[in-house]
Amino acid sequence: MDQYLESSEFIDWKTPDVLAKARSLAGGAGRPEKVAELCFAFVRDEIKHSWDYECNPVTCKASDVLKYGTGYCYAKSHLLAALLRANGIPAGLCYQRLTIRDDTPPFCLHGLNAVYLEDHGWYRIDARGNKEGVSAGFCPPVERLAFPIVSAGEADLPEIWASPLGPVVEVLQTSKTYIEVADNLPDIQLLSSCRGLPPVID
Image (cartoon, rainbow, N blue to C red; front, side, top):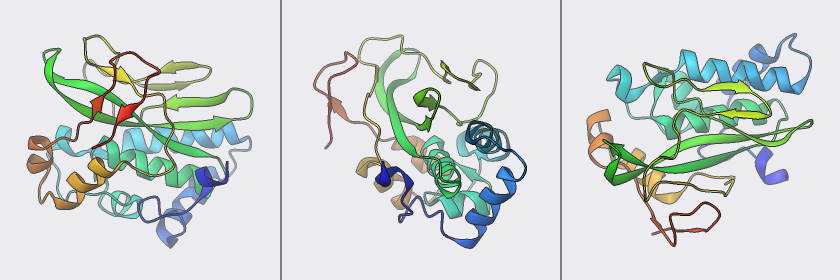
């Protein structure tokens, strides 16, 4: 479980601003589950999704997401993991493979989180930001994610990663604008589109 509490290059919760925000969110919350809910709500509602709000710069590190107040789903998941870990709550990164539009290929990855709650075990949460047609929430043990799996080739990837996937980091670090990210959304090839079988990471 220690790997899901680590501070790292992209989940850099030991940076002063991230640590201060994590402590501020947790102040007076009491139970870890309530702290997790407050961290989730902050990232979902207060950090702007780069595409939805047409925001630059492109962010990747949790500290940059907090500094600039914007990020793609992947970057927002890095910040949420950082805030949770800073409060001693194990958190990892999860991914779905989704169609980009109209329920047909091409596909891209979508980033979200899993948090370990004492009463429920690992529980997935999606802080990408709500909008018309998207309503993600925090209501354990029931998952309320932003996107369902509806089309052939889409998949819930079952792994819980301690660090972001390489293709995600590469796109976020090499893209200069939110439009460039949108034009190069990361994807991976699956051994099968069925849940439970591992992806092939290129």
